[in-house]
Image (cartoon, rainbow, N blue to C red; front, side, top):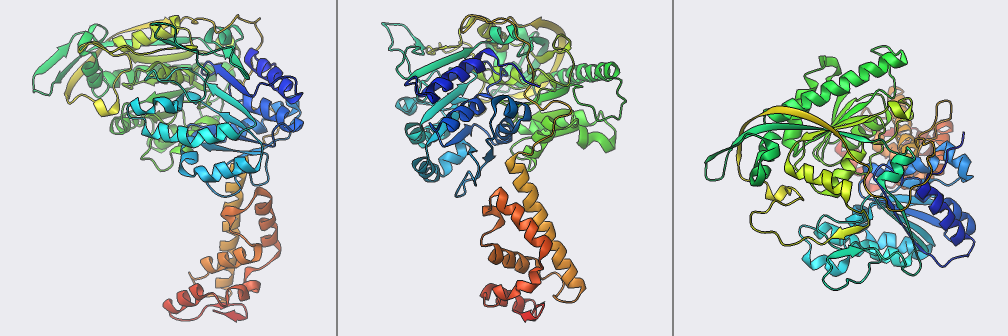
Length: 612
């Protein structure tokens, strides 16, 4: 089947077609797409047209976090879009190793990776003509402003490393769900109008030379049924805490807490109020899943997609673990770790947890601090428990967008919903007001606050109040559905929307990084199998041959598995199916590393007819 282009996708397609046909001098495309509106197809559209025309030879897609690299690979191998666009391009999630493309047409990397090895990426751009796609560009501050940035040393380093790539690339596709930074600073590379008089609004210059600017607002996305309307469940409550002077402070209503709102919010996120909000969100998601099972005729134990999932965003890791234990206690012991997963920086398998949450029926609940919000493509999320102190508009917009994606497995559009539960504090109310009334192409330069004014950005982790939470209670719950917000441009006629996932009955194509990982594991298993077989045949000593056999394989194939392309890994599997490593042990006879290892183990190791 084919899928219709949405308005912004059609516009980008027309622009890159003009670039490919040498009909325009545009080389910079800015796509301001409301979170959840479908940015991930834009690099595929651009690469398919530009590489075919020879304007670019390869594509590099830079994303803000590691968990988004797999999604970028998936966008290129989506079978429906490959057919619709007529492309055969594949990109891989690259580490900072030589030859990031490994024989493919491009690679996906992160801001952090580029900053860690800028010379590697610079050399790659000097060798080939690149289409550079940057996701969530607002993370990169303009370097002229970096001296005044607060706590943005990492972001400034990203800008320094990525700027040369911007300068060298043949075409640039710059994407963001928001065209403003929380600190009000300029964004790297964007064309801004010169300020007029005392005006304090920074505006994008739509007429900048060689630029094409595409907008896709929340209103347009809703009109095209590309995203779901959001319903907010605002929970009010009271709170009691001890301030830094050990004085007891209280508020009877979080929504009316005024200048005490920050301390009250800090308290409720860590005491009984949070447990109440978690319970409300959990029950709502549970009831939603039960209703979906009934409507689909699915049994309680069926692995069914499209039931709905719950994302919990916590204020810090210690509190997140408390939330995890609270949620797990609601399940039978054998299901607790299956149904509720955690994705945080101190969890070794966070990336695996996020991938499972996105791609499998279980887990149904994911608890995170800040790893799994921006750009995570999991259309099954129907409920969010917003238990974070962060109140910046871009951050919250990204978070709520996790629930607004249309789920192709969840039935008709009209039957889908996005429900966000949150504390009813004044900062969140202000955020609601902003997204309903402010234009998405302008960034207001923050004014200096009076000493007791209430900031809208919320608490930074370094400015957590030195208070002692005592207790809190949830008192009232109210629901509101967010208004669409202003247009970026004129709305387009309604068009049926569809998700960016493979439809039932279509073959699933494996992303390159997943295939590479699978093949490396298979090779490791095949090497280990030969070691065990030779141990049982008394050809080598027990527990002594695995590293030696790996060294033999590396000598035979000329490189390590970590450096191999996908095709080379497949060839290595084929070679191991036909050959015995012990027959090639002479390749390491003169390697002192293995002579030393064998002597330390108390004797030589027999490898077929050879010794070392």
